[in-house]
Length: 181
Image: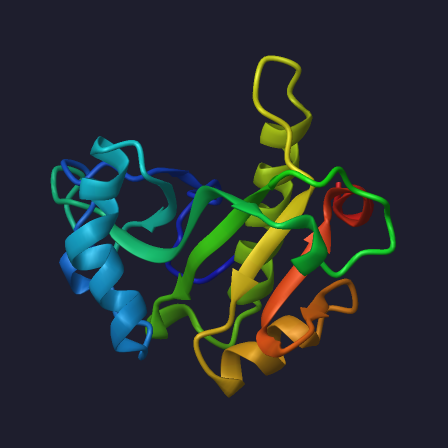
């Protein structure tokens, strides 16, 4: 259990009437800015979906907005099959993938394994969407590491494959995510 989460250990869709996104600070301005300014707007426009791990701050009343311990954002994307790092034979048309567009952990909760928990939750969520018979399938998950520190974090998980020509763009096939379930 991450300290301060007080029984809230499940990622839920972003709802700005219940959480205070403005106090989120992961130490990386572009990730903070996305949550502060764009996540709710993108959800309202059906461009992406953001999921947060809320927490109640110490001394906070139950009527106050909750804080955000971590979050991730998923979106749809399609890629040319020749650009996907796989040995599998793919049709010549665009291949659907899930984009892990954002991932951040509040500085208050860093160093407690929450980055890995958030990543695994995001990948499991992408897999469950992709394999739902009532949803649209995806071949895998793609992400773009924001910097070398993020790239090192993602590469510490052995299942990511680099795109040739773009080492900060990573891919994991849906079949590899099964092991996380």
